[in-house]
Length: 471
Image (cartoon, rainbow, N blue to C red; front, top):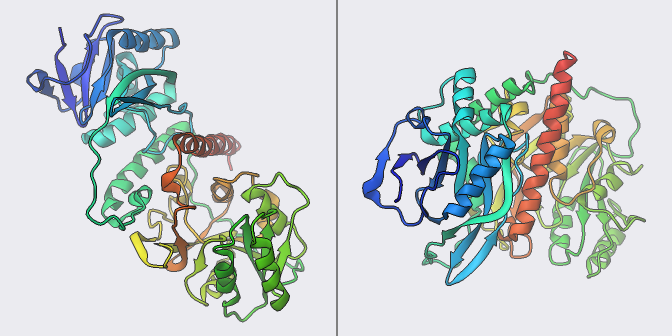
């Protein structure tokens, strides 16, 4: 017999005791669903199985027993598993990633079926207080607090399936939208502030919260060949590197600057394009590393540790452009004026033809002077273009990876230093078929997400140690 269901927010809850059969769960009979205002009324059973209400989930008794068994064996507060997508008579595997202390972003993917220990929920409610009334925020707060005292355990087994909905075909096939930037859209600001408050509270309970940073990079008497270096790592970008370099060469400044192109052994015509421009423009310094195991982070290290690097190192990706000839001047002015270790600007998403596409300007206004150093652990990045005090950057260095290298450095700097922000558009971030993050495979998405969570995990540990020392 199908058990009585309780609906809270976007989830349907089944109350379970140990391995008691729940009956195969498939299409839901709405007559058996009761709405509840909070989870407290559901805590009589040992476990709560939550399944997403908006999807048709197929999970049988055997899978439910497996979830409960793992919860019993591990004493986890929350258990989740990989799943399959049923689409046109095909079963598509959807593996997930392990939860870790740094998995505090609100978009962590638990799948569509989660098993909660009611003992864990009771404990955290008693220890940390009531959850928010809004179900969306309640779930986020719940799993953060559960993770403080209990394991959140991932079972790498495909225990259920999700029936895929029909794909919606848009009338305008040429319309592009970077949906993974939706969280920075103005209508979502109020929601982001509430999530920030919950994440900040988690960091306080975790001992990883930081007071506002006041440390400055300071001024230096060290000698540099130029005041600023535009750093461009590049690999096989013959289609875009010329435009990027022209954008850099067009900068109008009252100081000397150079352009360090770290050509990571391109096999197309990129090297020749850079060489031809360098022959005509001495500002372009072409570096070809002796090592062949470098990724983007390693290429950045080649530039910043080079004697050619200026007092400030300023980002320009090989397929992007500065929005105006004043970009470099504006960035360096803010770096100098505030004696910042790092300055982050704002950018606009454009297509191949430099036409603005949604959501347009990305200015990361969720950053605040009071709490940016903590909220940085919740979000996936701080923005672009990024610019650094070279002396500070040389003390830190980049990890030799091709994704998240900038986030790693930003977290490290915000742990110690006050950073500067520019909210005006300085940069055009081009999206085209070969470079968009939106079309990554599940394996690459998982790898990238896990790595950034790991960076947060390491940073949380470092901040805990910092707080123990009383810094």
